[in-house]
Image (cartoon, rainbow, N blue to C red; front, top):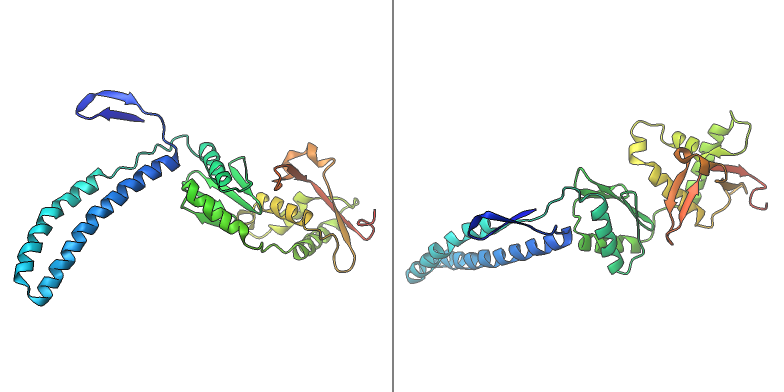
Length: 271
């Protein structure tokens, strides 16, 4: 970003790039100063309105003069407002690091990976083109790191809507749909995901990251069996060699959880 010295249009200096939080803090201070000027004008206009309502001619003369004196300053205030922030190359990595720092400053445990912030049980995706983020399935345009960190902390404190027993039953139904044509009891979770997202547009609303997150929530929930006693087991031993078919999630302690296959059976929990 290039800055000019006041009064010298020929001299240029290279300024250090401002991160988003600092840029917004500076701009907010400008806006607040402008509001003070606007409020001063508004106060005089209200007095002028009152004088007109009551017919106070002396007040009209006084306030009208003040308004005409102050009003031109509003144009100068508007012209002085400037938001200095160069976002080229900022999204997603630099922004993600800044958001991670802001969240940790709030005392939160978060992990930034692959343009995503894992904030158990939330997943925050950076949407570079939109200069926004997506929290779960909801788009969020307010991306000031400090403000977003406070919002994430609030969302994180709310009870999760995830219902592990219902999700396990859904996995089982999809498993049975695929298992009829298989000889092995272990099916890839990619096959299960494909069944769950058969409807057009479903995969966009329920991404592989979402599915991986739900697998982790189920895995850590303690729910191990269906009502009829059928249990399940995740398999990852061979799947780790097939990255495209492996679902990866960052656990709350920062460790990487990988899920590849699943099997169901009466004897699974007791093995």
